[in-house]
Length: 89
Image 1: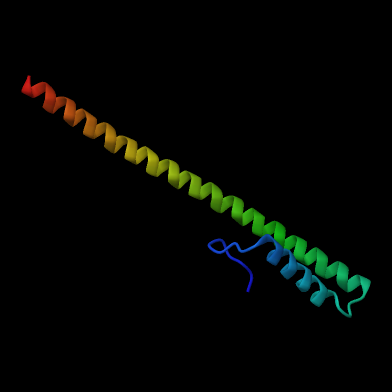
Image 2 (image 1 turned 135 degrees about the vertical axis):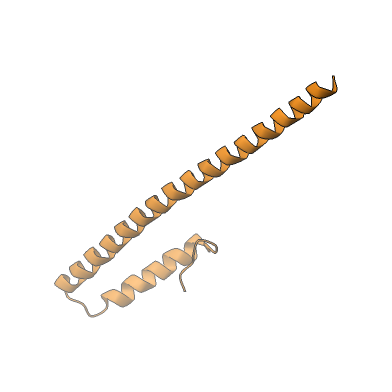
């Protein structure tokens, strides 16, 4: 099984897995078949990176929104504390 985000594994294991997969996919294939397989896998890889970029952007936006909401909440608490302090004086 290939490593996932929560279990990235060891870099050597990933390289070994990729090497074994390439050898298994290449065995007995002619030049045209190898070209097709290589281009297909390159395209899949590029699309996975595109999806990752979109997900990363969405996560960053969500984090910014959560931070802004927390900041608004804290500012409201500060105003209440100031008002409470001013009313006691």
